[in-house]
Image (cartoon, rainbow, N blue to C red):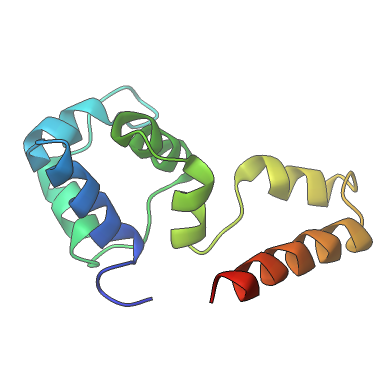
Length: 112
């Protein structure tokens, strides 16, 4: 992904569109222990100096920035936890996964 569409740059763009400073957004995103993430951590994410954060933080970014969490997971180059769990538990077959990926590719190809 290029520097405008990766996870961090999209977070930065959405944050700015909402009129939030890094400090404001960081205060609204909570680690598992309940403490807010630091503005420096957010800055590092936005500038691509860190990988996309853990799932629970991705979901919080989506909620605060009012964007679909699945889109942010795609920018983070991973499936949402519920789908990973379904695959591991065998609730999604190889055919199910292939069908979803083919549908995605068909949709992508019709948008080009």
